Length: 164
Image (cartoon, rainbow, N blue to C red; front, side):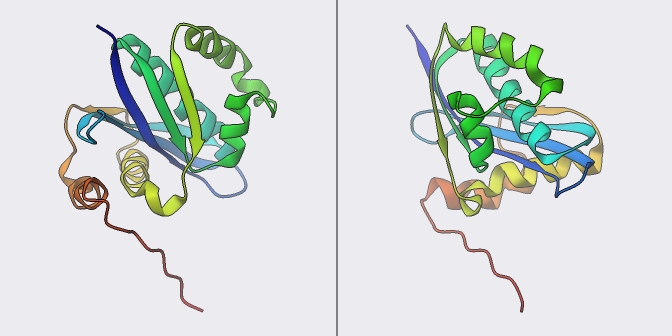
């Protein structure tokens, strides 16, 4: 029997120039339940590097767990374009990306864009990584994303406000 998982809500954080970067993702089953999530600290990098590396980790994790049917949602159109093959991968990640693409040949992978507002769980996971400066894995939603996880599971909207 083939397993499937929605490896969604891939998140990372870095703005502009290289700075402390982190990544996070939540893995969901077909009903939206959490089957795992991670947070990783990537040291000093730029945001594109962090996004691509986080997506590569998602593919590696799903493959190692036997989840060969995945839907990768990402809030960066650049990362989506790289995984679709229409944009070049950052050179520092070219070897890892080649291995990732070879792994994806044995999987069914759908890659799509999600707006940042739909990415609250992964964003909180990524923020956890920069504060802890370590790699973490959970088999269930950790308490600090529980509110966002339940809102998302219930299909409740998220909004982003900014002051003028």
